[in-house]
Length: 76
Image (spheres, helix red, strand yellow):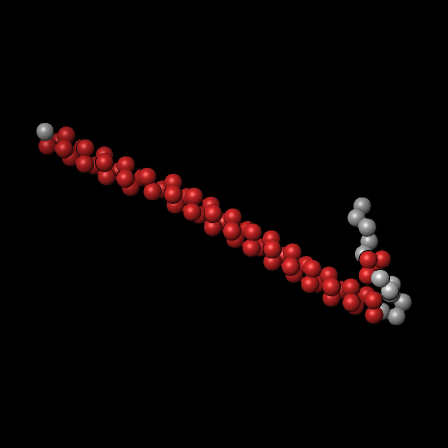
């Protein structure tokens, strides 16, 4: 009878401990998704800022175009 009680308590303890593993994986997945979103937004924002700086430099060149869109080559 004692063996059955020990087995049952160990089994119940192991099921409660293992049930939190899935929640931790979901939390880590959400963290990774939020970090990836922050990186994408930061890269986009920095790209737009640097594009503006390069446009300003190109338009100030002596033989450069007056319009910045003409200086950007079309994608193949």
